[in-house]
Image (cartoon, rainbow, N blue to C red; front, side, top):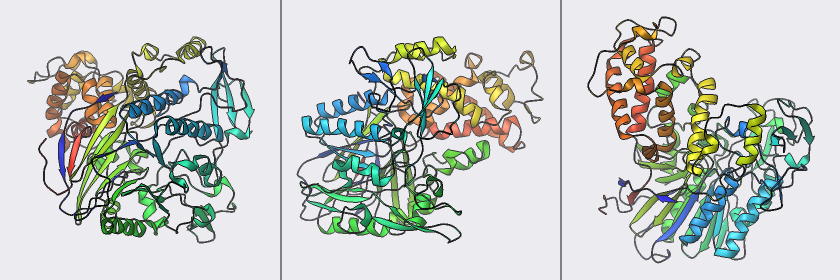
Length: 607
């Protein structure tokens, strides 16, 4: 576990209420808050699949444990924004590290499971219970879109690996395409659970009352019955009005500490003939979050404002967490990305400015989120103050890390713990090798990864090649990214006439004029630059350890060469590659995201 060292300071203004979705509030005067610094870990998007769970599948023999393994295929992992099997081991390693550091409170800011099936959630609950019993750790969760994809549950289909390297499709429904799966097993154990069946499996972890809680409430009162924790959702045409559970809660686990969990999942009721209990009657929550919450859950921010005001009046420290971001996480590049890629999922998930403004009006100043699998600090400066959004990275994607918030009386120290060494991270590699021997998939050196961090770095590189270039990038640019080098990019910038993929001359004719700082560009493939682009997007300053300093200087020189090209037509290669590099510059110059301090009194801190 690495603790990164880059440090900066954020000024929020005197008397601010601080919320960390996860957040912190400190009031002047006599304090009921715990004495001394209080450390709280925030873990997000672990996406645990219970590899030892019973899914009605014979599975693979695990010689080490004597248990049966039910694991997803490597092919599916390298085509997904997360890996599927190793997070089981990553969660254990992360909790071992927190136990070693004697961190008592752990927030799970959503997507703790993949994807909310009963055997999966039961396995996670068993792990958390074990660490509570052994180490006295306490866990407080909020649901993400993979924990409750739809309020009444959802169908789920996943390919599991067989001993011979083939796969079997496990599904909760019979009408599913097998793809290259060898056979199909239909089982109710693959059903992704909704609120009413899924939340009780996580009962000890904040969603319901416990005898040792000093205080517990929801936006609807003090009852923890799910029937008493519902709001009315309407279809756009007004023909349907259905009650949906909201899992938000406020809890006081020890005197003076309040934890506020905001359920920011939003499921919009669809027009149509479906009934309330039918899956297809609702949209999923993946691309909605806070943008939709403002209108679909109008009760939420007034309740949050009430909690913040009561925390101030009663001198509580208040920590708040939710799954979705409140602030733009694309470092001010949203319009450029929209122009380059169109309205992709990242764009759809970007919060609108009015979200941050209304959060500020409710008293939120510092907010921790998950969902996007990025390590990022977003800062919004609005009419009512400054809101800082700390995006917690995923343990199931590059870079695997968690946040540690240390709450002092006058400041909040925010640190990032990077998960590099995970025992058994390569435990399943022999099974993957059988899969590759059978399929011949060209997955490079991923099975030669040195450690868990390296494994996920390899995963991202494969993801760029096999998913992002195929699905996200313009069709005419994708082939160029896999064939050009950065010297070609410099040559393109130096051309006065607009270029397209069709008018690009042969390599022998692409000889750029020498520019200071661009020496050696011919040795950097454009695919390498784009992979670094994604590393910086996902990792912010964590990614600096994976990109040589000399290469960053070359990128800066290349960016300077493209600055004048924005006057060319928007469909030209010069303009679009210029956009790509402009976005890269936004990532390079991003706010520090690994270690920084927020001064509670509104002054910069010297350390």
